[in-house]
Image (tube, rainbow, N blue to C red; front, top):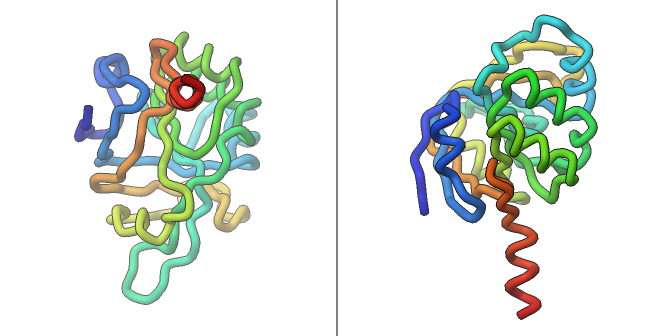
Length: 178
């Protein structure tokens, strides 16, 4: 299936997504990588409302002339696994990155009715064309790893882990073995 979804992501939308579905996201996504996750998890009040929010694991590059932002390719998601159950408990509904997630993250996605999406690695320059506005929201001293607020239009992603236990990577490996 292919869905055009508006962020923030509702629980209803998350529940209908299945591993392998393609989605085009429009709305606000927040960027956060390792250091930002550590800081967010230590904070009581976040610089954005986490309820139903989408976090994209990327460190945006500086914008070239006449562009909103530079490349925004996904980073390896497993580096955020230690923080992800806490982030989901705060209400974040959608995570975007690349690579497999741990069993504890997959369990937390099911528990909190959240989804993990993959953006295409190596396509950061193309993905940046989906970003229509960008601003640093928190931790500017972290440079590219600061928390940014991005407004995206039709950001293409694939559902990897759905909130019902689906895992596209496991399903793909099983189909290959047959």
